[in-house]
Image (cartoon, rainbow, N blue to C red; front, side, top):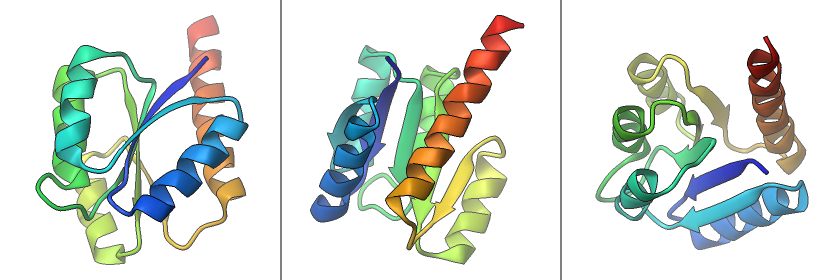
Length: 125
């Protein structure tokens, strides 16, 4: 089972995203900040970090950079409603996907499925 670490400071959005991903068969650990997510990346294995970019304390870009240091095999998808911030995120973490708000849950699930399908194909090679 693929494991996802979700870092989203908005409680309603965090619950909404976690529930949709869990219903799609993924194991989700959801936290409210980058500072809460960072130690989990050190202590456990995640296949995907799904993070909002704009968060207090440690933003999603800083979290993704930290993730690349402590867990380089973990993929990253950013979620944001700010296009300028998305450009900065893309430059900082070039392999990351960026999902712009607002988006439909089916779009999120499809993006995650594509990512994991690609990983599965790469492992078979």
